[in-house]
Image 1 (spheres, rainbow, N blue to C red):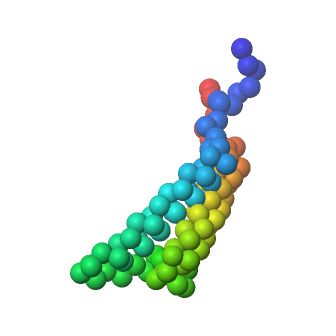
Image 2: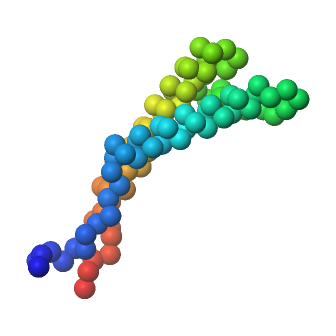
Length: 94
């Protein structure tokens, strides 16, 4: 039996979280880009402008997905890192 008074802490795997967020944000970018191509659909996709100035070309699509994935991965990695860093705030076992 372990002698630690701390319960096993649920940690977020940093690499897995970064990869999942990179894929999700990249997929959202692709969906928004595809939405701008639907005739008659007059919605503004400002999400595209966050990651690429040129969202009207295939090169802009590739660049936008790449940057969306990079920033998604960075955001998730930062969240996982700080979540794991604050594990000492978890309630202690009695």
